[in-house]
Image (cartoon, rainbow, N blue to C red):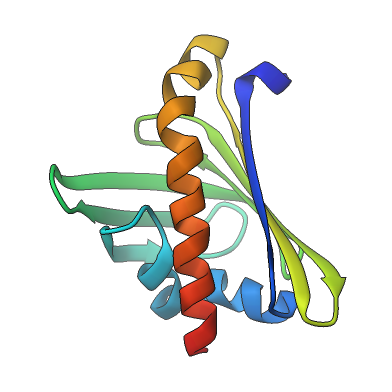
Length: 143
């Protein structure tokens, strides 16, 4: 399965509860989700198993990207996972791991149906996930 996965992680200088809050609160999430230059309009964010997450990501160059997902697992301060219903299709997990009182490792794990789809996305996704983490770090400083 590893060859169908893209995994990105970063250690953040914030408590796990604060990092989780940056995800669970749509008012914070909209400020950091996605690559540099993107803005977000969150239409639905029902953070529970079976709940919908629907958002429009506005790109700086190529217009809007509609995203629709269903949450499959929600363990506060530990793990959130969802299944995308819009293209590209993949399962996503975000793990929140407390390392120390003010240190948290966040890990994105994207699981694709095929190796081919994963490899097609890898060259784009890996650097964009790093931009996502940069934006999260900036948002955490405002909280």
